[in-house]
Length: 145
Image (cartoon, rainbow, N blue to C red; front, top):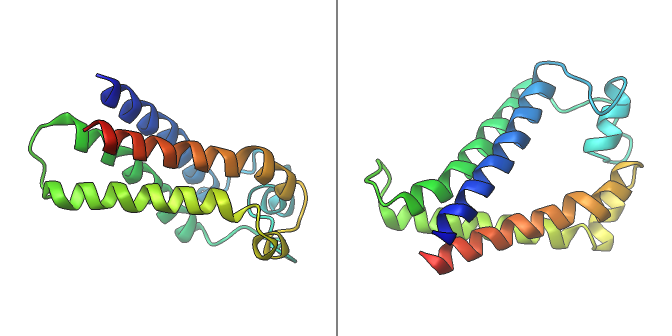
């Protein structure tokens, strides 16, 4: 039961994040007021004044959504088109990706690559800790299944 609750929470949160990425891919500007402020808020790379291409952002939206579905596939117990071992490995890989992304935010290399404000502050206080929480959620789902 706990694994289903965690898997559902991960799916819900990543679905919201995927939806926001899709919104950006279709030209949405929130939480910025123009493309440059949006890029500085959600990417923060040195000298970046525009968002990544719409196609790339849409691909990220799709991948984030699929990453949210994987825990539900794992805990559902129903047959899927993916072999169970592949689902398990995908979950382990996603756990590592989220945990490493969360940790990277506190390294000098990452901070030099993404120094623009408000991204740098948002990353330390929100984005990176969120990645650690999601990564930990994947680990817990794996441990409970």
